[in-house]
Length: 456
Image (tube, rainbow, N blue to C red; front, side, top):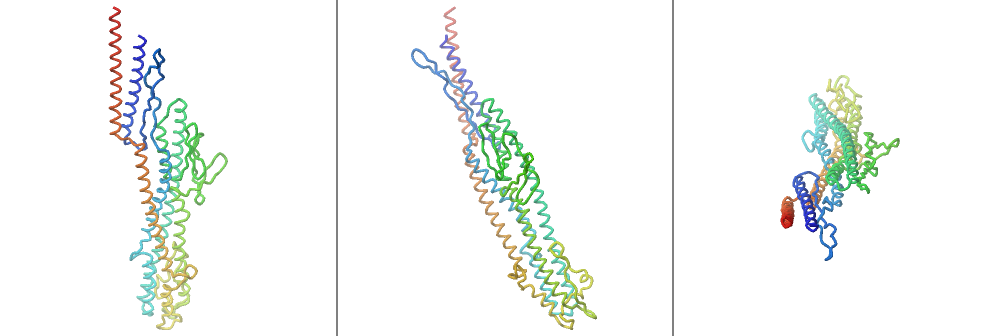
């Protein structure tokens, strides 16, 4: 009887082990399309055999563990590529917006408006006594001023929107680190109770992966299974919880408060790093270039125009052509708007003199920018060319990093992804083993019945 009882226990263990395996297969199939899910595998092991007079007799099978199949090395590579791609995508988005604002080459871009303005003075030089030529000068100057103001205003709006994006990303980072911290606590509790909380680990890894798009992260795991996450060398998630980032921004640093201490975190990668760079460096540099061009134009034109004479008896002189000091406030002097005869063409007020009109027209070819090394047109064209080169670089980086990330995800999928074909094969294998164990139980029941019949 003891022998038959042992066989029943052996078969029961087999039923339970194969039932766990079938359940795991079902779980894998159910999550075949779940983002971040890693396939799981039941590891079976033979139980301790029973010692008999004729040797050791096997006692069945047990579930040793339910293992999560995933490559931590590929996870690290994916996180590293994520922050590079996040930065490239954000840079591309910002630069593309700047490119749209600049709108070059075009008939109504700043380069064309600047050329039309100087050409209008050339036309005035050809007819220095013509009032209609003066009206054209004022009109072209108005268009040029509006183009400067619009470009400056658009860049400042982009900078303001970028700051809003930075604050949104800080909120997202804090939300993700809080989520990771919650998973850490649940994983610690599950580990203490025994077993491996595979699904919780998947969800935590997915949160870390999402975090890596926003900023470059470094991840390590302690003995309790806690994921310790650092940004810029400062730990933001540990066994004790998460430390939120504040909205205090100093250059390319954000601030983190740890008790009474304040720490600056350098963020140079990811979407947040790209936005910080754009807000603190890229857009201000573009604004500075446009302001420098507008300021030089105002100063150079006004210096010549003040010394010249317009029409009238006596002819007007000493009138500024532009007001303002930068791209944001450049405008045509309202006196000229009201009376275009105040536009100066003559150097001495004599009839037919076009010296000032020619001099202002020739500013187009004068090296008055960048330490008198380039013309205004050259300086602006250099700005446009540099912008185009930077956009090409961002596009190339994005394409490259997208391809690298795609390849890494495919490699990880080949390791951790669920193959329904493979799971179907496993299901049939475990099903047959379960059925065979059931048949063993049926045989034992028959043997028990035979023994009972003999007793009766």
